[in-house]
Length: 106
Image (cartoon, rainbow, N blue to C red; front, side):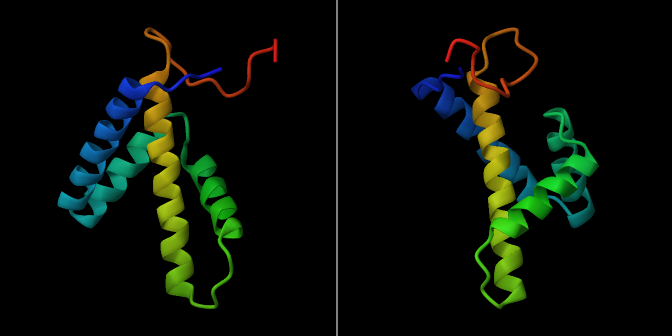
């Protein structure tokens, strides 16, 4: 089980803030490359990222407005990335991976 204390939360949110600040300051192509690299660092390669986006698009309530729908899915994808960064900050020192399942004793 992953435990996120106040310090882990602060660290993860600071990392996310730095990432999104860098993303906003970058040109479009560079910003896309940054996002791809960060997702890849968490083991989410391009095919997995496409599956993630498709799943998020399916979760968005239908608004009838393609722009609103796309913005909502994009915001949800950013939220996934923030969650990964918080989980990474909370991962035990020396751990290379974020837990992907509950402990066996649950």
